[in-house]
Length: 395
Ligand SMILES: Nc1nc2c(c(=O)[nH]1)N[C@H]1C(S)=C(S)[C@@H](COP(=O)(O)O)O[C@H]1N2
Ligand SMILES: [Mo]
Image (cartoon, rainbow, N blue to C red; front, side, top):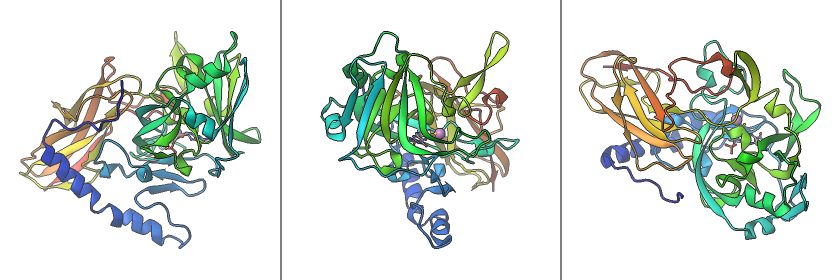
């Protein structure tokens, strides 16, 4: 069903290209890159990414520069809980054990020989956009750019599980990374723990769930999980475990730190709030331009644009308002819908009069989920998917 092509826009090509040119020219010399290089004089942060945390490295894509469907590897956000491990592909092994008939230890070469599948998927950190929450939420203060879209290629997780042979009692598979450390909390981790998350087998066996060794055609970069990572298409980023070393098939649901103490939300079940691990992505759109506080010339055409995604569903439409939500117009969607990938959108705006304006975008998916206008507190400091207003000045 996929998905190698970069959808071409069926809309005003010139506008898209003009946007691309504007966005890409200043990038190499952006104030952010310069400020980063000047700071302290130690290691330079990767040019073009915004440093949200130095140790461990947490880097954000400058979302206002969004100008293409596939996010280049060097601009893809990085979310690390622990120092990134450096793994040697020649000695590295992926162990498959637990409730399986045939435990495995696969080498990098073994994995690369297995049938490969490519999926273009958007990864968004469950904490993306939390810096915009009022009151302030804890965690890495991501603005808009803890999100990216890449073509991932590798072996479907289901194929590896099938090779190992699942026992009847199997219910989940825990994906374990090579990175470890102590979470200072609160709450504290039980000493040193690896980054690990489980998947129910129903999701683990789906064809869009990959053990990926390629990202946009290149070997997986070190910061994105070399030599092998999971890509759980449709789910928030925390499920896509990097630097995989072990798949542990379990006979009961795993209750590890990163799905109980962290990355959870309050689910309402018949009037009771019950803590549940975060899974699939909400429907969400973000405005790349204008940015908050931008000044826009009156009486001229302005290209409002951004991206929208809907996890395991598909974006059906994006509406744009330039008057704080009083009136809405349908945005143009670029190309065609690619399952699990974001959809770029744009809308032409001609503000006639000077003044303050509030720009909004609101996505609807094919299941009828609509991006909410208000924050849902049950989501704690995660899943920030409500409509985020962008205040601008027209002059
Ligand atoms: N081993 C490991 N895997 C991990 C993480 C991590 O810290 N360690 N972070 C997770 C989170 S929270 C996110 S959002 C994604 C980010 O993937 P990226 O850094 O390639 O963008 O990786 C996930 N996989
Ligand atoms: Mo994340």
